[in-house]
Image 1 (cartoon, rainbow, N blue to C red):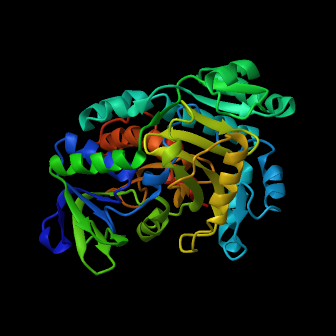
Image 2 (cartoon, helix red, strand yellow):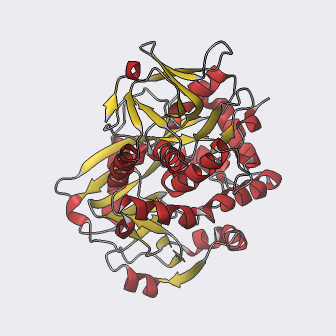
Length: 424
């Protein structure tokens, strides 16, 4: 049940700002610890990145997006306004510090450390996610069929060989397939792919929006209060109890505050005194409800930088990375460009009833989320910045935040994810 903030005059144990997958995971984990919880969001039913993602449980993504050599490839992609990467000229000055940090990630000394930190989270994913799905009554919504990364050329497959070998060192299970084996597994794909990599532990959900809905309902059933409002800043002044202050001026007090507002979290962190490099990496997709059975598992098209996932609600074709800020209107030509690729590589799609979507991925330049206490305010805990891995790492993040809230030693060392890494 949703309530007005004025109906919660007494601080609860935990206030969670944000009701996407990460915020709900944190609220759920806190409630299961016996803590009282209030969750704030501007629109609990509204669309968000948690609803429109590709649905993949991408446990194999244990290397940062900024792989060696990507920065120079990205410069070429920018020439194509509908290519896999776009940066709005108006947004570029604001995004420049983010991109400079992104370029540094690919240096060997940073790349290896970040990869091991990502792997530490991804190794725990099923340990944390499966019990949550059981509690939500959604265990059957998880399809553990693996995923396929497909290659059109020998050269592209060879170019990625070093990264695949490193992923194996990180514990990623995969095996290579030839074109004939790929066609046997996914006959709907165009017969142009020479190589494929089967990601053995990848999975996908039937419908990400259904997970958000079920998780929110479970959080309410466990006793959480939902408060509709737009979080403006966090007040940790010594004269009053910690609180999230809404744009209406209302205060929602809690003994501890969890900031889980996705791409909007930087403003709240700044109000506490913490700097973070966080940007909206806007992604696009189209869902085809009449083509749900076209593929058996998620397919990642390596050279074209897009994916296709067979959700129960339709085949979802998406990708792209657009940096244009939080307020620029969507450019759905980018979704159309992805659909053009879909038609080319998955012939015979039924596009009746197709719907387009854009969402804001909360991206850090090093591909690591921000998890842990604020160094400036002991009452504030951060849980945001998961980029492409919000769904994948949601339950694990909730479990880690519960450790922090309960002042236990976290089950994963949180040092790599600390917000202090962005301090000058």
